[in-house]
Structure formats: structure tokens, C-alpha cells
Image (cartoon, rainbow, N blue to C red; front, side):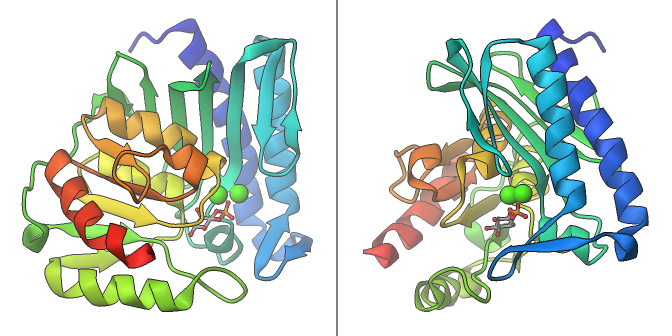
Length: 264
Ligand code: IPD
Ligand code: CA
Ligand code: CA
């Protein structure tokens, strides 16, 4: 499949960092692990992957800004373009050898996401989207699922864990959602949760307290697959609020209806 020069840059960077993560996954026991905060492990693999992405993306597009989870913001000359990168989304899965993790690369122009790539090197699934050109999984066009009722839907969420999140609110959310859906899942890599919504594997996904790099690529991939992405209010920008709800128009609306009043 022919891709734009921009997508080729992103694919090349994701695949190189992906090879590195895959090698490191194989040697997970030997990895030295440093503590970044409560229950928030950052491995050497993570830092190495971000360094590679920074090198490849800034070499190909000198001047673009770069926001990475590990290194924060590096400003560029070109104030209108910013890469938003999570070199390893699903760190806890990775450290436990669970093959549900990904590299997530989003590109923002003047505040709008214009391209995204999410790559899981463990199973070689690569999701991509460019504004106005559709979303793809390994060259296959993606479309969000068509289910209209929550009762038929499989939905994923994020869950608080030690040192992080609002447990009471989360339990209230689960109490409302669980009895209404066909299945609830917690996979542990927000970027892939969004990619799964784009692929129609999941009908919906919501999570609170995320960072822009968890959602940047996912946002454009879901939208280009025909889905809706917002914050908990239903019409707000998840990259600004840190909360996300996505799905097709029906499931998105159902989730907003249930979740919006709970956070008040
Ligand atoms: C995490 C994952 C996880 C979500 C967390 C994120 P990380 O990102 O996306 O699914 O529940 O809130 O922080 O730390 O593995 O890059
Ligand atoms: Ca993340
Ligand atoms: Ca990360």
C-alpha cells in the first residue's frame, strides 16, 4: 500500500523502536527497572524507545516540537507542528510479559491531530490514520462497529490501581455500566483500547485521568474509522481534559449519558 511521505516517516520510526521493544520483551527479566512513582515503572526499554523515536522523527522533520512521556516537551522552531509520543503504552503489561502494549505517535498541527500511528510489536499490528484519508490496520481499512445498543456491546475501560485514580468514582462507573453491557474489559494500554474501537473489536472505551500521549494517535485513528471521541462531557477535547469516551455515535452517546453525571 502506498503511504504519504509523512506516514512513511512515522511507520519507519515506529518499526525501529518496535524492534527494540520486542528484543527487550524477550529479555524482560534482565531489564533494569527504575521507579518513577507509585506503581509507575519505567524501564530502560521505554527510554531507549523514546530516544529512537525522537531521533528518527526530528531527523525527518527538523523543527517540529516533540512531547514524549519520558522527556517532556522539546520545543522546535516550527511552532505549528508537534509530535505527541508514548514510546511504550501499557508499561505494566510489558513488564509482566503480557503482549498488549504499543508505541503511539500522533502529529498535531495548530492544535488538530493530523496523523497517528499505533504499533504493537508483539503481534505486529500497526494502526494508522491521516486526516481525511481513513484509518487502517496493516493496510486493511478500518470502520468502527455498528452496534447500536449497549446490551450487545463489549466495552473497555481503565481502572485505578495502587497510588492512582479515584476508586469510589470508578466503582460507581462500573456499577452503572456492568449490568448494561454484554462484556466489560480492561486491557491496560489505552492507545490499543482506542485502536480496538477503531477496528470494531470494541464497541466503546472510556477512561479518566489519561495524558495526551495516551490518546493523541488513538483520537485520529478512531475518528478516521468513523467513530466519535470526546471527554466525559460528550463534546470536550480529551487531549485537554485527560478523560476520554469513544465509540460509534450510538455507543458514545450511551456512555456519555451514563458517565457524565457520575463525575459531578
Ligand atoms: C497507561 C496505560 C493504561 C492506562 C494508564 C496509562 P503507560 O500508560 O495506557 O492502560 O490505564 O492510565 O497511564 O503508563 O503504560 O504508558
Ligand atoms: Ca501511556
Ligand atoms: Ca508510557
